[in-house]
Image (cartoon, rainbow, N blue to C red; front, top):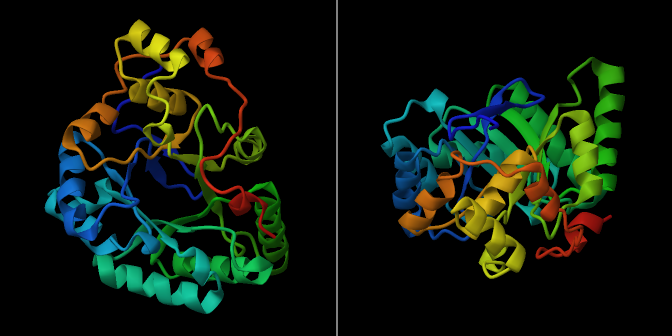
Length: 288
């Protein structure tokens, strides 16, 4: 069996480690975010994925701090909002995130989407790079970037490194996209895998819309697991970092119980559906 545990990590291109299972707080009301994040930490999660647009950075951070777990054992992500994608806005959001959370640094800061056009995207990326140089951010990356957005950023990084010195263009560590058997995104996955960029999978349990799928039900029965656990295990074995979200304690616990079984090669092939039917708008990936 491939040996994973909830405390296992992957090494990012930045040199820092990222826990292989994250707890997502998308659509989690600020009023309960501290409580549910605190419970997630009790379950064993050490990685919380927030965003400025979620409006719950501060209570999520409060939940992390209330856990009593040492800061260097915690991993917190946030993101520049989609409609704020330029240099000046990104600089402001970085400072505001530090103020909101009370953290000395953000573990991972992402560009939430490829909005803003090339100038906006590159400008926001420059702000993230400066945040790393200033010690305010440890690792940086993107979210919802298609291959042409990734190649645009890679070209900028390489050109800047050549002109100003290695590392001056920044280090792309993560691309967070919707990933599950019904949206395998082979083009994006292959691009990132070739370069060692970590893929984070949001909506890894397909927004709970596939609970009665015959393929999943057969695998759930075979392994005595739930269909959600099968999907999360698939994600782990693909080398992704899944980000399940739930505010229900029992579901949060269930989603963390995916380390005591393994899908066989045959099981994994069963889930190679190749559908690529996104539940998230395609325009995120195709935007110019």
